[in-house]
Length: 338
Length: 263
Image (tube, rainbow over all chains, first blue to last red):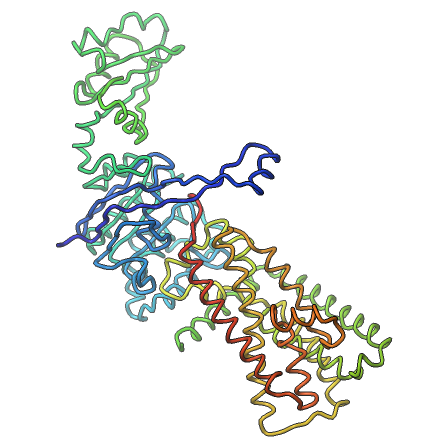
């Protein structure tokens, strides 16, 4: 068995007190609490081979973070098994966490008030990294994440992009075998996202680090992940490659054209031109804006653009990002329909 | 163990660097602290100058007990102040996640991260009171007085810290428990004065339930009179040990109940 991560039938339930709105409701809940059990994670199983980058996706509140927190030993599972490199995170936490690195994009583990390099000096002691290895490691992380320009600045003065790079470096200082990244690209601009993706890729390739990554940005998945596990409402709904995901659920893209004159819209007839079934292309007019949603399995982006440009006068063109939420929506309909 | 001591030095150094990072805040804080302490000592002077003796305890003896009570309070305040934040913020906001992903004991990590220099205000009052009272007293002194004193200080501090750990750990279940810690902590004011001045109920509570009396009055009265070593010193050791064991138990159970916060 060369699985780095093995998860079987993992569950996590939370007790929740239901409150009616307003102060009256809060007071009532204080004396007569109505409890409800929320299944945040409801029987999830999957495996991750050594050295793989797994994209762990799902809409907000699907239970992604809860799974990550159980795998990293933060939360106690209600039932089920998880083994990482043969170790149970909850059984021997102190030894287990030496093998993993964790980054929560929304939170920082850096020492807020001190220069960034102070954080690394403390982490070096916490993880007992020998001096020589520490020097080599810092050189490597500096090269991959370009920390040099802000390593002497106090953490509170770093930009979000710098902070994220610094946090990723902090999680890698002790050369972990598995890296958990919970939304590492959240709120970052395109250039920084690119920078961080390259760093993750490089670390994975050079050190064989197994990576679990959660994200809402499909581009992260496309560029990094060989495999995807998708969960929703605490259950696994998909496990496979990206092409398979698109094949199963459709790769719906949206193009927006701003027309020189609204009446031009009459000239466009995507259905007839592409001889497409009704559900494959749908165009709608909104002011001067034509929004075309289509399945790239049936029609290519190039074809749509060239047809539109030939037919009408276009002032501006916008290609919208594919969102994972969009795929989830498709998933519910179980078929590609626009 | 050596590793933890070494780490603690580093954490304290980091904390001091942080203090220096905000110089104005540090300076104003230091001035404020000094003023508070001067006022407190002046206040004590006024109160005690009206009371020549308290149910069999002379003025100097009362000052000694008061000063003695501050030793454990000072040490606890200096080293474990971050426990307040556990009950008020760290668990409720999910910030506790960080400690659970590091390969060191969580309780140690939380405690070591902060180093409360404010506590030196208490140290100042404590030293002044002891320096003033001891020369006026005729206390028994043996070769074992100093070692015994050290033992008492360790276990008395454990009583303080353990009570704080237990009340902080309640927030693993309730999400916030800062006010419980606060409530409990306030009862330590009772221990600054001879226990015999209180009624039976208060005496029982601060001896057997929240044994703050063992952090000050009982051991201090032993050092003053040399009477009842078994109860006065043994009681402190037992109370400290039992409470610390309970604190570790509650903390570890709490870790399993920790629910983090959404992100």
